[in-house]
Structures are given as C-alpha cells and as structure tokens.
Image (cartoon, rainbow, N blue to C red; front, top):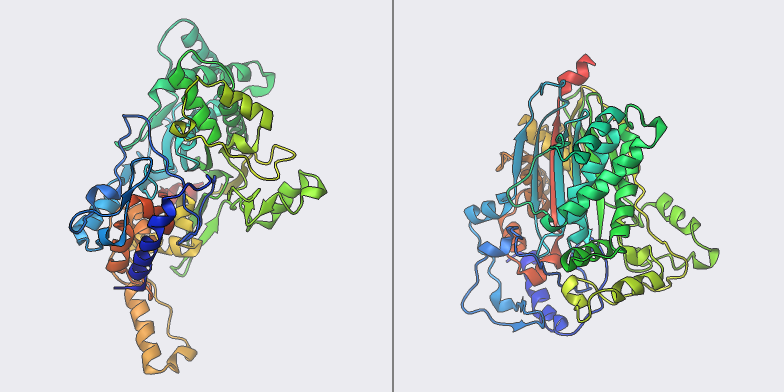
Length: 538
C-alpha cells in the first residue's frame, strides 16, 4: 500500500475520536492536505438538491463500523475503507459532472472568439461548495464564464453563480435595450432573454428566490436608466467591477429586509452569512477581461513558436501569500491592529481568502449581526441554517472584507489557445505552467521532450532510469476527451515521476465524506478554447 493510503488509514483511525467532540466553526478555505482542523458539517436543506458525489459509488468491506455524529452522519473508522476501485468506477466518478459545449463560429450577431468549452467538478464537501456558470450575452457581445468557491456552506456560491452573470450582462446593455426591458416589465409582456445559459443537468437553482432576484435585477437596470452617461452601456471592465460590488450589496440588503415567506428569509440570511470567492471572464471578439475576488484563478495557455506551452496568469490570488493584498488590508485599519488583521495566514485568524462575496460576519457591525439573527422566527435552529454563533477575534473596526475585484484586460493574440478557470482546489495541486502543459499537450496530442542536457548525459544508471520514467509519463496517452476531467485526474492522481498512479487516485476518491475534505478540496475547472484564427485576422 502506498504512503498516501497508509497516511489516510492512520488519519482515519485518529479522526473518529476527534469528530465526536464539538469543534468551533471556522469560515476557512483549507489549503493542501491533511489539515489538523476538523471542518463543520454542512447539510443541504432543499429536497431538489441533485449533485452526484463519489460517495454514491464507494465500496465498503464487510459491515460498516464506527459511530454516528449528533447530526446523523456516519463517522468512519479504518475498517470501512476500501481503496479497490476499478478503472471503470474511477472514470464514472471523475466524469459524472463533466460538460462539453461547442459554440457556433457565427451566431447571427458576429464571430465568436470561443470555439468550445469543457468543464467539470469533483466534490470533496458533501454537498459540493463549488459552483460554475457559463452563458452567452444575447443583448450585447461576448460570453461569460465563472467559477465560484463557497465557504461556510454552499448557499452564497449558489446565489452568486445564478445572479452575477445577469448583473454583468445588464451593465453592458445599451440604454435603448434597457428601456425595452423596462417596458416589457411594466406591461406584463415577455422580457427578451438576457443570457443563453449552458447548464449541466446537476446544476441547482434557488427557485423560491427567483422573483426576488428578478426584482433586484430590475432595480439595478432602473438605476442605470436614470444615469445620463450610461448611453451605449458599460465596457466589460466597468461592468464586471460594478456587478461584483452591486450584487454583494444586494446580498447584504436582502438579509436585512423583512419577508413574509420564511423560506426566502432563511435563504437570504444563509447566503449573506456564508461566503464565496469568484473568478469571472468575459471573452469578447478581441479581448478577455477577467475579474477576480478571492483565490480562484484564470490562466491563458500560450503556444510558443517552438511548439512549447507557457502560462499567462490573468488573476492574482487574494490571500496571505500576496504581499500587496496584505498591505492593502492592513492600511485600512489602525496601526494597533497591524498584527491581528491577518494571523496564521487568515483574515482575523479565520478566513483564508481576503476578498469574497457574502461573509457578513466580516463586514457588518456586531449589533447588526445580532439584530438580524434575533429577527428570525422563534425556535429557528441556527445550526439548521448553517449559521453558527461565532464571532471573529479582534473584531474592532469592521468591515475587514470586501468583494471589489481585481480586473485584468488581455488583448487576444494568435498564440493564445485556451483559458483555464479553476477554483483553488485545482491550484492547490497544480501550478500554472503544469496545468497549461497538461491541457496544451492534451489539445495537440504532441508531448515535447527537451533534449538530454550535458549534465543529464553524465547521469548514473539509476538516475537515467528515473529520467526515462518521467519522460514516459509525459508521453502517456490521455484517458479523457474532456480537458477539465484530464486536469482533475492529474491533479489528484499524479505519482512521483509525473505518471498517473491508479492507487493514489483510487485512495483519494474512495474517502468517506467525513474524511475527504481533509485530504482534498472541491475542484471546479472550465477550459475555454479560443478562436486563434479570429485573433490572427484582427
């Protein structure tokens, strides 16, 4: 059994007793594995949830042993674990959420800079806290793609994935089109479609809140109509910036207003108290604009003249590894808080991403938070809403968090072949260059091997054997037609020499739900293939 499997078994044995006690809730993105801090269980309270997770195809040996937590979830012991998954079972797990969409080169309004896109998700949390979105702007030009990484539950990521692209599309519309939308609403006529969505069959929608979301989107375009300078609509850069900030403000407002519908009220509060990071790309005919808030990431794959692949990052992670971001946050608070604003690489020692939607625990005053929670119906169990009576330490001068995105504009070039959008679960395991190389070689089918260097010619036999194993691993044929699945497979299953290790992959995919999040994160990937011919003619 590999070191990975042995480590997991050892971890499983000690983890059961850890989970039997009550642990404080932390709004955290856990990076890497294993983590020493148990994570609070988040359960879905909507019967229409339909996500497929790896737990549905796990194999167990004999009778399940272990204990049951107070929430009713089974806590595993090492007797439960069985890492013997067949290749068919592994493929079934990895491919259950994959999506491939071809885009017409000409859609009646103009040429498209996107040829097709491929996407996939693999859950570690139960349910998955990641979300993804993809849509064509029907009343303006371009396509929108987003990946969203939830924390403190999945509620915020769900709401943002449904709504943010609408806000961005509306902001880019001309005043004339917005006036037509408003007339249709006023007279009860069908409203022209704003987006053509590309949904996967497992995607979930907040149907109960749809009317509220439409009402607030309408207020947004009404305010744009009242702005004299709106004219032909915002540029993609301004639209992305405005939509991020406006949606976050609406999420905060919705949690504060009274509702006659208890379900809508509890949903609005769940969304606001949970949080999510977001990375959204608008792909136009000649430019890509990327707006990022948090630690998701966007990277362009560039085909160099010599046939090699290089990575061009279009976003920066907002976490403690970003020194400019650290200085920005510290400058917003008194010098006396300089050592407490970020501790243990987390905001106030709790939150790993330093920008995010929702997370009103880090934005509202103590008084407002307590007032909103007290406004819930008597007898409402906060645990049932994924809300926890938790106050960050050293909470002296809020807000400590905002959603304002960093926005990058990139002029498309013929050598720009694809764009990778991924949540941090991918980037915890793969670097930018490695991810681009994997997709590039998957796309071209050509695995370039650098010539043997003079120093390599002096290798001993064992070292040369190791080099040959690494080269053989790079030249192995791809197992997946979907590049997003290809990335996820390699992120979890790469062995010592870069080869795909079936045992490692099986061990990580068969972990029970109470252990999986300790060894890997939810992963969401979208790979957008760019029309290089269009860039060449431009």
